[in-house]
Image 1 (cartoon, one colour):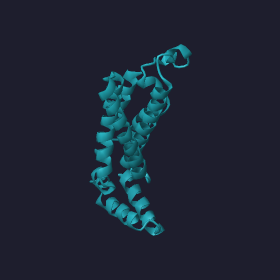
Image 2 (cartoon, helix red, strand yellow):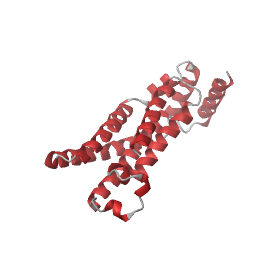
Image 3 (cartoon, rainbow, N blue to C red):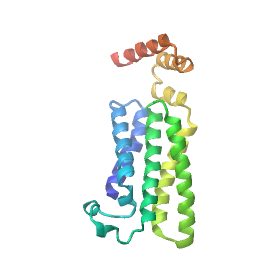
Image 4 (cartoon, rainbow, N blue to C red):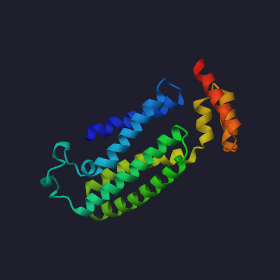
Length: 194
């Protein structure tokens, strides 16, 4: 399962670069990469972090050496990692609620970081160090996404289409104005007609 996590991480973070360079199917690649990694953390973090092989997930004896508190902690850590990744995807795709997801996820990662550091400093358990590496990687990227304004992402992604950028910024400034959103749609169609 660790290889799967590495491959999905690479796909997710390469999709950031592709998205900023307006590569064909970048939205699909981003969605697949981030969503797959988020789903892996959301539903299989307890097994992934505790090094339980995929073939033994449903076997009771695989959990004999793992405390219930550790399983609960890995499930919560997986949830905040997943929320952070979904927040990054939303911000990259310029979807609404991206900041809320990111802030909630990063706050949860901050709590998980504190717990992991304290637990690691007490027992020097490699388990917490492994989790800490994941938290730091996702947390750093998440923090970068938080401090990057959505306008900057819009300008980078659509740098060849200033009319579209202007239309979107106007619509964001007055979100209830349907005429401005119609203008966004018109400019968007022009991009894909090229």
